[in-house]
Length: 563
Image (cartoon, rainbow, N blue to C red; front, side, top):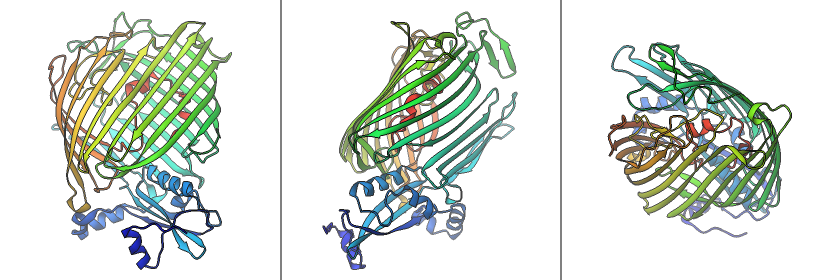
């Protein structure tokens, strides 16, 4: 046996435990030590606060943790399976930290799994300076009963229209297996939407297969900016979708191919006449750019899924979280989809062929990392006519000057061309747009945004919370393209400052208050304050909502579900 020499291991040896490398030894036992969130000294000083926090949280059940561990008693200890078990646990949104360690147990080894939970409370409120003072409320838990279940209810005052209600449920361990069930339903002020899917996500290279079955629908109004002095017109759109896909692994972990198939059906039914949605009702509109612009289509396809992956994982700390660990993908992965329409297709989708591709590549180390992710998809009618072409992605560069000092630069882009779905990309979109321009009434068919941010971690407050300050600048533009009422914005820029918190200090979730000042204060742009809460460690590229709307509701590439 090869011993790993380190100060913590010396302490372990003094306690009668010797940490060893996994090298084919028989596993005598797998011990789970699940722990609740560690709120640190500040909360520990108050019995009342500490007691309330303890009662509001149920530690993740050992049986839940055990199902994500890729080794069991009687197996041979594998370094790959140990590392992947640890990484999969860290990738779960209800786990903040995880370690999987092998200890000598005679000629065998004993596996000890230690996890620390993320806080499970889900809560939020909207307030107003005038009656009604409470305008919104969100309540739920990210780990109901410690059983890896997320559930939440949301209410928002509808003012003139009906109140909005939303329900979300996600089970990360269905039937005691690492299968996932997701349910989402919402009654909006106008319209509604729902979605359900069951999947065996492709969490690790050691898996042989992955599958996904999903369905859903929506009834919504898509708005189009046309200037600060005019109310935005809107088109009502109804969409339904169903899909089912299966893929399998070819080759060894770390250097593999994926091959699969998927059936997909999507109905898109936009209205032919625009309306204006106001605070006192819905009125007809006569905007010529939207009248009879879109038509109904039904796409029924059989898709072939092909992928290649040569990926390793790099564990780092303090990049997309203040101090918590995360796993960066290094290497390259490619997913492609080739689909052909079936006889049940109607309208513009009747004779289409679908092509889509997703590319990711990343490289770096503990102090510097760079990555690019790009997605492109489109439909080919006949031999040369491309429609519904959508491309988007992100390139990012992280430089960790000091353990408390991080500089990030990233570039995100999106473009739609000849879309059958009503869409317009906003300059100041909440996700993906320029901070400081959310009030700007400008949209187009393509968007390019660059961001530069410098962050200093300024304190840990006894482990109870981490805090950081950052300075940032955004620069970007939208161009008109071929979307209705699209405009060229010209280059716009904003500058700002952000206060960032993590509670507890080692949480992967960051709370941000961004204050952004546009340098071109026209078209409705002005000082903007954004409050957000997000875990950015689990995915490199979060697709903005307006881009997600432009995509198919059925997305063949999603079957891959790269971890």
